[in-house]
Length: 304
Image (cartoon, rainbow, N blue to C red):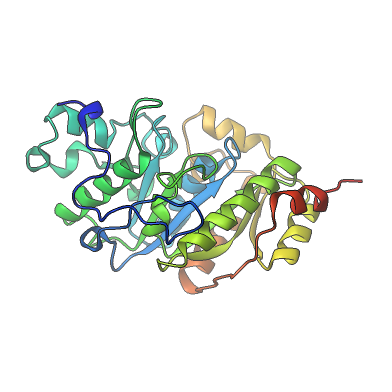
């Protein structure tokens, strides 16, 4: 059996539904594979905006607070966790194929890897390009974690999700998360993508517990356009990560920011991540934002 032989709609899911929004055909979450007990966050944003960098450093910050953290990469490139583990770890799909999809033959150490400061790392992987749905892979990953009781001793779960929300499969982590965070820069393309992600979160909130948890400004010296947009739709910026060369270098060194050579500017960024982690864990801020129509936001984002 290969990944191409997998059924389009796994039998553990219910039939497709359009309840999540106009035109939606996303399968509904099987309640038997829900995540209970941990605070669960899904990180979204425009492709290339730095979601994996944000996710990994946020995971590290949670671990600095003494939390037991699990980061799940939801990209076929499986590069979400390499700054935590120092390598590209095998994906859930990789190990499932090795045992011909007999999950009972897997051990936790086959697909869960310990990274920096005890952060546990999983790369869901995905189907070959153009051949399947990423939502199935996310569902199978959470199912495996539950079967092996790996979620029972976890305080924080972070889903790092690829690119923009373009289909129900990429939105599937929203079925597990309690809060979704959007990473954006202070530019047209990033904010335009953020608006569509906000719309996806709002659609999922009709049937699931997920809510919008705030905006993380990344790779931006200033945030005036982000803040103007946030005020217009009813959401707030919860962190600001500036465009620093040390962040670029940390990726090249396969390291989290907390492992880089100390400097005053680096300390400020690390402090911001720890502050954000503390705020997300202590507070439960949720926003009921009203996304704009595409044409309206096109007109709204008029840079002078």
